[in-house]
Length: 453
Image (cartoon, rainbow, N blue to C red; front, side):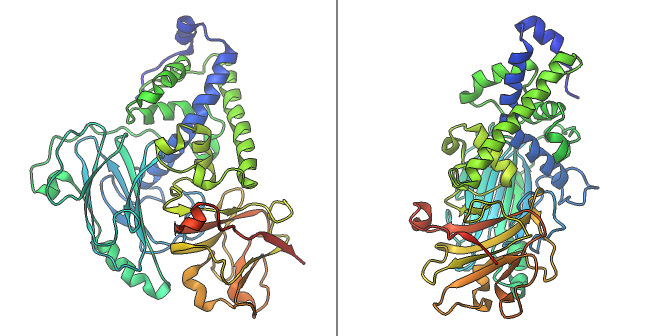
């Protein structure tokens, strides 16, 4: 258990006022939200065997030989283009070695390495390491070893717990057996097993605490005790020493505990959390209008330059999104008139024949119902439109493509180009996997979503 740290002691030591506590709580909440929400998901995936989202134990690669559906609810805005494999890594005792087989050149795959801060600190895959196969060592912050033979690269994490999200491209439903074969050849093993040596002493067992629900993360002061738990696996980055000293004034820090038994401090903490969501709503407006893009909010620590509001926004809008060089997400949240999208209306998106999304791998448009940001159940079980489906789309007279975004069928002749919408509010995530330069530099523009009659 986390040792108690009462606010009475904090008050005595720092003479902190409720206003100061409120300001610090807001800052610590924005900082910590991605970490706490990541913990919620990892607890469901790798700890809670009774959770319907449970994948398997830590340090065990689990393949999911299907695409996501509305039944998958742990992650907001899940990708339904690529079957996943999931691996939660506990790197405290020793590194893990990830081995990938040779994969045909035309098939995209990636292994996204996400630390406990939710930074995408590295990638293995088609874009970064190629499709020739090989072994890669993932090391925690304390590992001091040399690069072993047969290991192509050592990749270091600044946190002891890491999530590896594998994506293997599925060309069409009949391709699933090929994906299963590739997934079956992925390997993840401790370094000692990879080398055929005796294993080092095991790290102490972790007494995982119960996570909050996504709803309770928004309002419960217990949020900060979960953050304190997670911080135990995150050695303080030099850039955050002063930040952590400030957070400690309200009891936020590795192994500490926030005690809100004093009513005025509890009120200050809750107000600080509400202030954070006010800032997030301002961010969301910038995001919805395109003034801030997904490419700006996912990436490494160095890329984000410790912009914690961007990191929180990324977690809220689509945790585990890729860095922009790996994938771009030009979202549709409003129509061409600036109105929020709603299934009570009908919309079209038109791509000129020579203006399809420019990618080295593939592109897709995926429908998500709000406010949950989950896939939408519909009569034809279609959750997305993507480039592997190009042969089935009906082309316009000029060779372009018009997609129909609405709740009811646009008619049999147009149904191949129909993306079913819910009856209420929704967003659409466009995904450009391994985007070309014209997407990265903004030369290519996503077409508007127009309301139709």
